[in-house]
Length: 74
Image 1 (cartoon, helix red, strand yellow):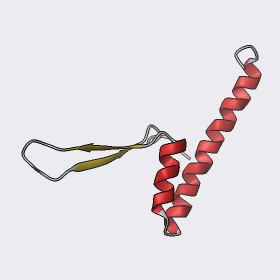
Image 2 (cartoon, one colour; image 1 turned 45 degrees about the vertical axis):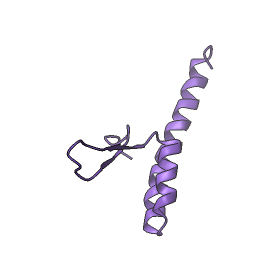
Image 3 (cartoon, helix red, strand yellow; image 1 turned 180 degrees about the vertical axis):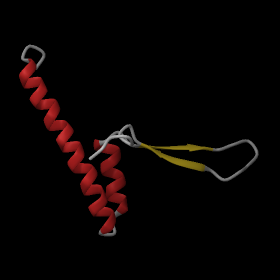
């Protein structure tokens, strides 16, 4: 792939399209009542992660879902 730029571009494009497909499917899965699967797929394939933080004054735990693709358009 390092030597053939056109092949690398094809592979990168395929990965991008696959990620878009996973993101669309996440919404379908959530609508169907299986949000756990949508979360798992996002973590495995889209680089999404959960960020939690416990603060000193014993406030509730803050959980934030972070995605490097939040600004990406499908």
